[in-house]
Length: 92
Image (cartoon, one colour):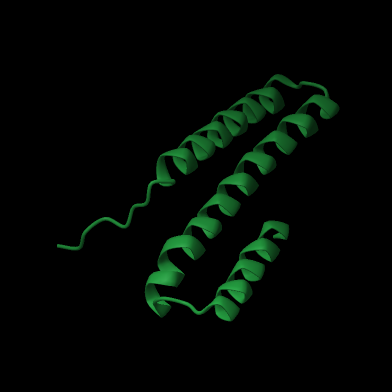
């Protein structure tokens, strides 16, 4: 049996995804109730933001743990390149 793939950041990511799930559930209820489109759009923005933040956290965690474990110790020049790569992923 394979061990679960977990990192210290996963509880925070799960929390973000649960928040997104709650926002989405609220949004569905708002549409069912016939709420104003502006209110629904604002709630959808909250859903998108929560999912986006969870995605960013997961990608950063992957770079911090999985990628470095794969390639091994890095020299200072290589470290700088990886740090720049991590930084640019914030714009995803």
